[in-house]
Image (cartoon, rainbow, N blue to C red; front, side):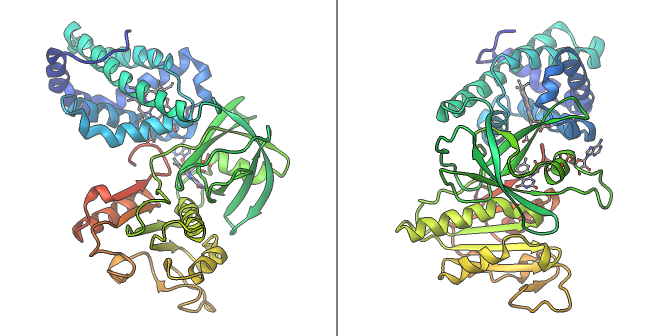
Length: 414
Ligand SMILES: Cc1cc2nc3c(=O)[nH]c(=O)nc-3n(C[C@H](O)[C@H](O)[C@H](O)COP(=O)(O)OP(=O)(O)OC[C@H]3O[C@@H](n4cnc5c(N)ncnc54)[C@H](O)[C@@H]3O)c2cc1C
Ligand code: HEM
């Protein structure tokens, strides 16, 4: 299959006309696609999250992306944000141009199998051309991203230099490069992928973790919540392995920092930043806060930051000491802490500000939400439904949607 752009008007017409069929069968097609592709290329088990396959999140994410593409095939500008997010995820997993041939072959074969006789030669040809055009876009963007960190191709070995519990569930890992070379700066809010060998599976598994410290040349820090499976879920694979089996001196492999959820610490000082997080969604936020306060201390722009965070209990909130310290340093950082279940000894104004789950209606509209300031940027991280609620609330309050940035700690839109 030739990977090329552009796609002809005839092919565009067929792709748009068949988009509803794809919508109906999208997840069946993509589930079959993954099964066949991984059967033919078992080495790909090393880069796809087995849990996202088992839960169906990854086939759903791919089906949604293909459908979005079919819908906007004649107006690709509308897909800019989706392409950017996927390209960064691919970059962090070291996806390579030649792998697009493999994905394309199995995707088109799965379309043909599921649609049966309905997949006429014209339809197969149009979708093959459409896939090639989409692959061309990704390969081009990913080439740019790889070129930006040329001296870090693929995976780099890191040693765990410190392992520190932040709360009962969240532990920080301080990771130093084994080669001793200085680490590149990243944009605060970005993440890395880690990969490690899972003995019970017999292959590697990757996961993404936001960098939870300001950029520094000597180490990166990640802060991992142990997904214990309490409630409805199954225990998480990698977070439990990291907590239980990875200790100081052990090594992990990391890809270079990636991701489109970040602030520019040197942006206009007049542009306020509002961070809204829940649970472990605070990890990119602490990097943003530490980076912005460091930039201001070094004579850079003094951007006003408001951080609204929700935790189940005050004790479950990581980095509380550091945040109090940053807030005490001046007028730069304003925090509002919601605690769902304050403990008997917790004092309002100290351990928490507002009891209950995050409710933006209870937050100061100007001092904490900057609703009157059309330059304010909003960064939201937490469970998917929470983020969508926050986004909808902000849009209702008059914030333009493109000023609201979400970081999904999973794959696709759940
Ligand atoms: C950009 C980004 C940044 C992130 N940053 C952080 C961070 O800073 N800190 C952090 O702790 N996490 C972060 N994450 C989440 C992290 O990557 C992992 O998803 C998380 O640690 C869980 O991984 P796990 O291997 O322990 O769980 P997994 O094994 O991947 O399981 C994840 C979920 O899937 C469910 N599941 C597993 N198997 C099945 C099945 N067969 N059927 C149905 N459901 C199933 C589990 O119950 C669990 O809820 C981030 C994710 C992304 C994408
Ligand atoms: C045009 C072709 C492709 C499309 C439309 C596509 C789409 C997607 C989407 C929508 C996601 C989820 C992103 C997110 O939510 O963060 C994703 C993730 C991923 N993609 Fe692709 N992709 C393509 C090609 C490839 C190729 C060639 C590979 C390499 C074999 C690949 C490997 C992966 C992996 C490993 C993930 C992460 C999966 C996980 O976390 O479970 N993709 N892709």
